[in-house]
Length: 140
Image (cartoon, rainbow, N blue to C red):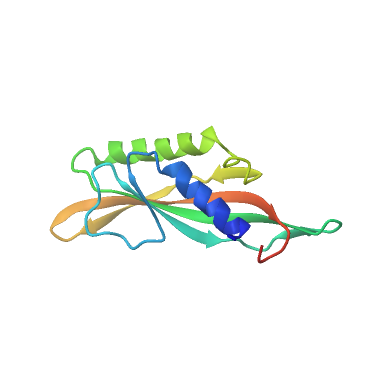
């Protein structure tokens, strides 16, 4: 039986699947970036939970990361901005991931240009997505 953490991360990954960009989970950066872009979901850190007693519950603010990468020629900035906006729209459409989270909150991306020898530079960003959820134990 999957843990609450894994169930929430799987739901986040599924929420991003309909986007035009290729969406991977915990994969290495491929040699070729699709024209529509690439999103790699990283598990991130659950952090220290707040604990309530009676009943015993662990309240997490899990910080998952989305690595967003595009490598389009002259329209790279536009493709990147469109992809970031599409991620925001997808997350805003269901802030609870079907009731699995109390709330899903993306943070603003910090973008960077990554040079690639012999090819167009990559435009990339890491978007931290804070997943608020509750479990019955730290390993549940």
